[in-house]
Image (cartoon, rainbow, N blue to C red):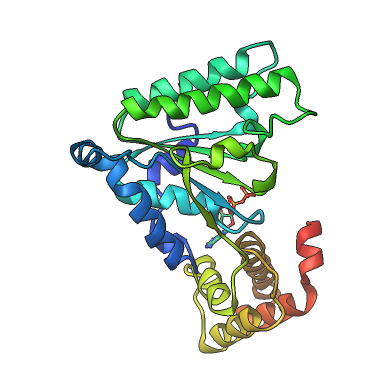
Length: 270
Ligand code: ATP
């Protein structure tokens, strides 16, 4: 079964408290998917086509997956999450069969949000260089999306770092109706993300100031994933300091050290 492929998240659900700096994206995404998921009959009664899909695009590690899970949890919909790489089969026709199973399971469990990560892997352009297998998978996905016209309460949220690699046909109305860009966080968003990832730390005023400085200063270009790592490194370094005899300032000191020692390049390399 495709349902609950990530048991840890399924157990606790992601809350908005775990998502930093994406308030605008949260409310836009909610607006886009709430009614199609939960009140699909509204569209029929008005004779308009219900929105079926949204693409979240932008650089890796900016929280696209986190955001989609939080929205689904908030709406009380089921989530069927599948990295596109896991849908790709080895024998001929296997990818198409996997896609059909995914969609039929989603319909069975409606309301369901299907999250396909890295959708560009199976939604590649059917241009000159495409293989027969790629073309078949892309065509199958388009057919399944068109078939959602007859299915209530299933919406697809796709994430990609490579919008340009996707077949144009996906970006027509009636398929993915909206593309939301999730970019690297600005200083205020970086502060929020750091506070998400330090919320269980006993922060002194000095430590809070040190983290604020880190967010405003040297972390330009850091993504949410980079900031999560930075918070964790700070925690580990504070533990070493504490083991060596505590001063009460170990978190603040470690945050400043981490600011000095971690540059975006190091983080990306890690
Ligand atoms: P990819 O394109 O590589 O799949 P993504 O944009 O989907 O990346 P996530 O997988 O959601 O990124 O982010 C990875 C981890 O980084 C998250 O689980 C979370 O811990 C942290 N993170 C990223 N963005 C944020 C954010 N805005 N707020 C809080 N944590 C974040």
